[in-house]
Image: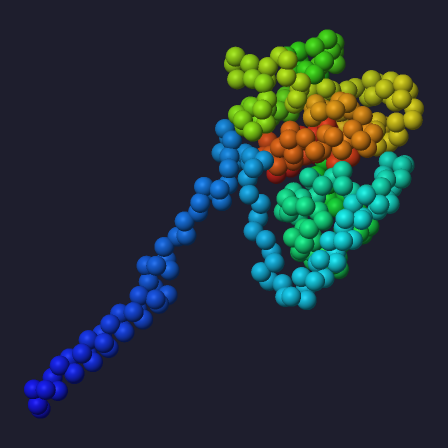
Length: 326
């Protein structure tokens, strides 16, 4: 072996060694691949005073568009156009009345399908198609009559079942400081015990969320002059409910039920803005666009409350995970 060939062979050996190291460092067992990805502050879930509470500014789920092809995206663009139209024109019946569109229920729809985006956008249509597929509906991405009917059924299925009547020993008196009307009579200020305790926990979490801008009193409670989230009505006896129906004969079954969930003591009407309990479309639109209502849609279930989709102010205590006895 000549001495002149030695440096060349050494260089070749070194090059081979470096190549092996590079391959190992990029393999599946490398530290770089096992290191958890860093999450920026804007991408982390945001919480309030309660660690499970979702702020209104919390990010939505990642877009589902990765799994779709170019042709699919074109279909969803067309679906978006249909949704823009149907959100105000879709005809359906509820409570004995003809209804138009589903735009009033956008916060509930967004929460149901995990959208949190413009209903007229492509991502909304994508997420809707995934939900439709889960429910055995044609995954068109269009919120048509069949899809909306199934959504309404889903909303209604979360409510109190059986409407059990609350006995007097199950009720507690609501302090006047928690009432929307500071002159409300004591006999109209009752709620089922667990329901009221859950309401207080929920309000405490809302107060801790500074993004809502609620006025707070000295003890961290809602201030006396703060109306939002105060209780408008809770337990109503069957006799009192019948009296209300006689006073409003044209309210319809959607407005004043014959077998009202208020007789359970587990239904609370909460002030979320506008006229407290008016079912006029323009009033409900104002309420559902408000920050407090949207906060409740995101968080009320964490405290055991589910909405009555038709009335933005009406919330029913079914327990966390629907644990309250039927």
